Image (cartoon, rainbow, N blue to C red; front, side):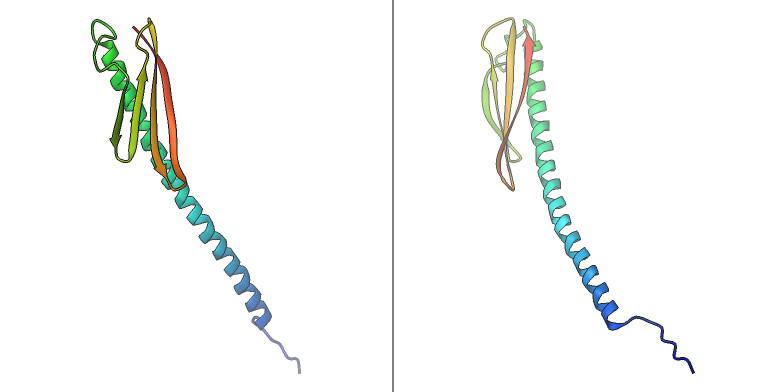
Length: 122
């Protein structure tokens, strides 16, 4: 008489549980990292949008006739909106004036600053 056994041994079950546990711990670590990256990307996108909006406001003010004489086409700030602080610098003279918009915002790793620069023809 032959004895046939089928199924898993206790050692095989323990090894499978350990491997599964290691995989789950890896996924949990990766998901928290991904969540932080998404939050940082969201804030960076908001800051870039705020800088772009401010730049468009300055370009529109410069386009008023006569060009570059609108009082809003000047250095200014800070303007704070949704946790983002904007400041802007406009050169006071010249046919081509450099314009720089600086945005400062808070992330999980501290305060970040980004700049958007262009030149406006007067």
